[in-house]
Image (cartoon, rainbow, N blue to C red; front, side, top):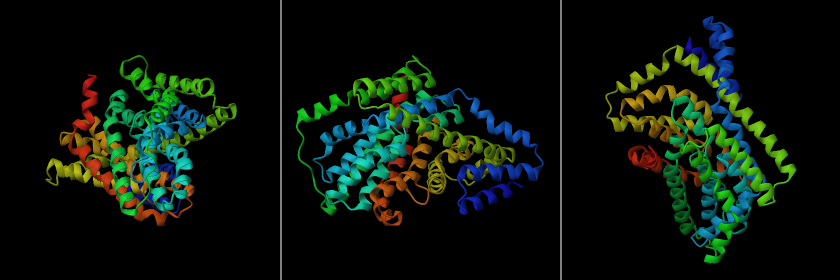
Length: 423
């Protein structure tokens, strides 16, 4: 009767029911039809809230919110501006580099899209960039927020796949930078074709001044990852220290964080954590139903039984994940596909950490593609442009993102080289 659950899940999605509730309701329906005690559903729902590792998620979200409300984004924008504004499509390039810088501060693609876009999209429009192109750059480049560490999404993957969070953080560095640089090149090429303006050449003094002013923000990810990798603190302890660090820097160093900003940060942290944990809890009931019916093994045996080469199996997995990322949220996708695809990936010889990063990058592209792309919705709202009008401008970034993912998938050293240095 697993078909009842799957059909009801997609019906509710089509009716516009939020995905967390769609997964939870369809899974409960499966329990009722199969006569499974509802106590087991409640146990599966609440059991994962007891995970010590998940305590890091609200702390990471809180640290990112404190940085954003402390106007850290403006300091990082100035650093990016002094680095790349002289390139064709200067402000667009600044948007991409800012997203890469904000990734190490907030760890959230949605937060990056909102904070960076609110400043740069209006500026780009004033300089003659089309609203759709400005939205496309902001929406696509902000996905590196969950790939460049630290990232709360990586914590979820590490917990689900029983991997080291420190290794995941280290593995995400080069892929995140690679995707960011890919989008930078795409922005430059399109800007040359459309004649978007360059900005004035920055001086060395301007660059070093902006870098000095943003120093305490930019050093956060180094401090955080170093503490985890060298065993100074656990992931949860490091996340708590990051929140304290963000408060002290925003309040007493930069003096740009007000008590109202702290309150807003707390409120947004509660909301963000609730959304994430609700999806995690309902996903676990849904995943339990799939596993109890042997669906992961069934799919794994079917794909491995197709007789495809290892390279083609990896390509098939990437195609499926890209498609899934377009129609479902990131966290539920992780809970559904990790039990299904990990045995397949390891069966064709992929390192688990390597495949985790490939999976993360594949699902990340769904953040800026319709119909459920969260960074696309935010960027279009800021740019005051309809989503359907951005598809033409989004397409080049989607294609170059796929090229970057293929490079990451088929060149393992891009992912595994940095972790190997700390073994």
